[in-house]
Image (cartoon, rainbow, N blue to C red):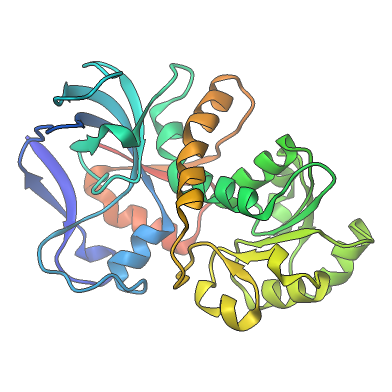
Length: 313
């Protein structure tokens, strides 16, 4: 019997329901996957609540875009996968489920060194960080300031930027300094005096700034620290970007991602799976919840916890 999390109205976490659905049967170019872990992202809660506009609800909506699992059936026209393969899949529809049909093009072989929970934690955070850094041209000799460095996107961005030769400064609360420092960035406390603290660490100022926090303080500090606004990007306040003269990737931005940017997001996943398998990348896992407790997982993601939340069907 296959189960999935659905909702039929916008609202709080309580609208999430465990529903019985038809068993998955893959069609052309598709795989059936038994889900071992599903990533819980802030965007899931924003869509469920209606805070992120997504049109009206005409039928039960599914939740979740990132998962890891095992292939249970292979559809016609699929090469490179067979029953029993461990996979990670991203950009899927309805990842909060026990079993799911996914496009084979969205699935990637999962190395044995990478746990299902780690793989399910990658999708949106890793893809967003990788694409944003590529779009901004972060590399050797640059100094990157990341607002919200201890979150999932911030942690991924720190690691990519360090691997690519940049110097990284990342804001966080003091209790998270050790985590930020372990990833290769210099931590700095947000709040009053942030501009001065950043200038103490980088007298010439940052050459690129990424806002993964979305606060007024983060945006005002960014504008004061870097004159070239084309080198500032927000991942949270997309609707304000045009007025501020900065760039936006996701975060409610009315501008869709380009084909190149979408390609970078997809490219990130096999890159990180390989890095994880080699012990060259780190994923901080937070609490996990059974599939039936998806509402509790959404309460946790909305209240804020350390590490990435996953559901374990």
